[in-house]
Amino acid sequence: MNPIMHDPGAAVRAGIFTDPSKTEGQFRDYRAGVRPEVQELYRLNHTNQTLDFVLAQKQKYGQLDHARMSVWDAMEKLNQIVDDSDPDTDLPQIEHALQTAEQIRRDGHPRWFILTGLIHDLGKVLCLLGEPQWAVVGDTFPVGCAFSDRIVFPEFFDANPDSKHPVYSTRLGIYEEGCGLDNVHLSWGHDEYLYYVTKDYLPPEALAMIRYHSCYPIHREGAYDYLLDEHDREMLEWVKKFNPYDLYTKSHEKPNFTELRPFYEELVGEFFPAELRW
Ligand SMILES: [Fe+2]
Ligand SMILES: [Fe+2]
Image (cartoon, rainbow, N blue to C red):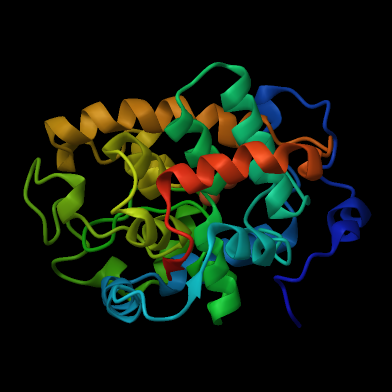
């Protein structure tokens, strides 16, 4: 089975979450008749995302010695991936990227913000480097301290050995009050990976959007406020500003890639070298 190959019919056949006319409250609805693959992904994710696993992944990918690719190479590769964790869309990722960026552009935001919309999910190329989806997509959360019950599917953490660890299962775990997110290890996925790839090229606000956009327990639930510092609180305002573009632009309307490409090629060239290290 290759769960990452795009099967546009799968969600349609399942008859779930494929209606573009749905209202805001219907997005990210994990409870009502969630697709079985979404639930299975979170079961695997919550079972296996331990502090040790995250540290090993950071070691593995921190050197950025896995590939050299342009943003466009990565974008084309993304077309092979459909995110199993996402209850809202079965569109190829490139269309999600363009829909997100286009809405940011229509709202008159700065060019770095538009670019961030375009590239924010490029870290999902991890799937093509052999990582299972549970180590690439889905909401992220701190590891090395207690798992909050405000994380989606909290019951699956019972199978995570860290939930019984004498230190990692405590409120602060290995951290100090207000230590700042830079010092906190989040579950491994496409956010952190793309942050590594882009950190020399984008302003801090863009990097925060990239690094924390999947961390709903922090930016939406406020579940770990005690770990944040002042800088985080400032940056999270930008993450929250970005979030609706990521969520509510998912529809079945296809952006015209050929028409849009010149604009985005110029934009990418403004910030990034021809090739990036992955
Ligand atoms: Fe994402
Ligand atoms: Fe996204």
